[in-house]
Image 1 (cartoon, rainbow, N blue to C red):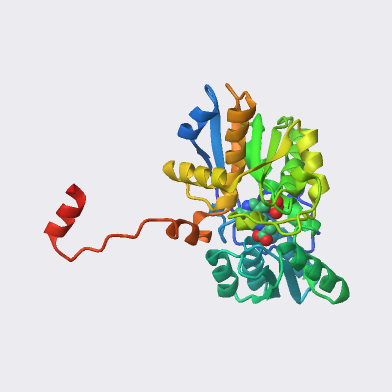
Image 2 (cartoon, rainbow, N blue to C red):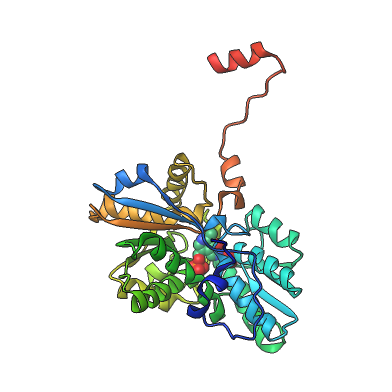
Amino acid sequence: MSWNGVIDHYRELIGLPSHAPVVTLLEGNTPLIPLPAVAKLLGKEVSLYAKFEGLNPTGSFKDRGMTVAISEAAGRKVQSVICASTGNTAASAAAYAARAGIKCIVLIPQGKVAMGKLAGAIAYGARVLQVEGSFDDALTMVVQISQKHSIALVNSLNPFRLEGQKTAAFEICDILGKAPDMFCLPVGNAGNITSYWMGFRQYHRLKKTGLPRILGVQAEGSAPLVLGHPVEKPETVATAIRIGKPARGEQALEAAQESGGKIIAVTDQTILDMQTMLATEGVWVEPASAAGLAGLLYEVRTNHLELDGQSVVTVCTGHGLKDPDIITRRAPSIPLLPPEIQALEKALLA
Ligand code: F0G
């Protein structure tokens, strides 16, 4: 079967005006990769899968929402789009806008965007501006500018983003034949958890696929939904989710609660340990993408969460290539050898 992107595949389930052209890079249809080694740590006979969203065209889940948001904007003959971003939304918006021939402006927090994301936004030809402040400051600014001028907002406050992102829930149900028992993911601005819950409920209404319990995971230094109040100066190595005032925070809490799950926070070290563990199964993700599973393992180990015999899906939201520095700056220096076999032998046998 040929795959022509999420709008083509799920057209009748996505709210997109019929006159809008489809702007696609054939996103979606990402694999559900079994993780047998980590599964053993979660309980007996746990079926654990990573929905590897880092394999989308620009390397993150944002492409699912962006195909719909940019298609809708193109349908209105929008000339420019804008977003605030910790990086992945920026790269995705830039790519889809380029494809549609629309100008793209991205506003990023100074010094806090991983290299692979920034390079993406530049490569796809976006106008990149940085703000002396946080993602939350940048979001406030772009919301205001989009209300004042005819520049369309493509952050996940834009409902068309959610229409696209919910297709990942459909794909999971299509592959497993039902929703998983447990589902975990990182939470930043909270658009994705909101989208998944929309998607799982919509599919359940249509196809009786069941509903998962949802565990949303924030980083301890950026955990407004756990603390119950905004965080003025959020900090975490997982820069993608370095967000102190999530735009869809209320909906995220509702999604977790309605599903019988919750939102928790874990330390940066716990996130990095899970990033390493996932890599030992051949799945390299950026730090934020390891947070969901890091949180689930924490719940099993610390709060005695029982997962025996259950199916579990974790969303790996972005590819490891997005943030190579986090790996290389902690790695030992790489030995330099003269071009001689003896030197290689010595290094290997020493
Ligand atoms: N994981 C990654 C890799 C992300 O880039 C983001 C969000 C999230 C998780 C959290 O998703 O915001 O829907 O709760 N990145 C946004 C950006 C904020 O600008 O790229 P969320």
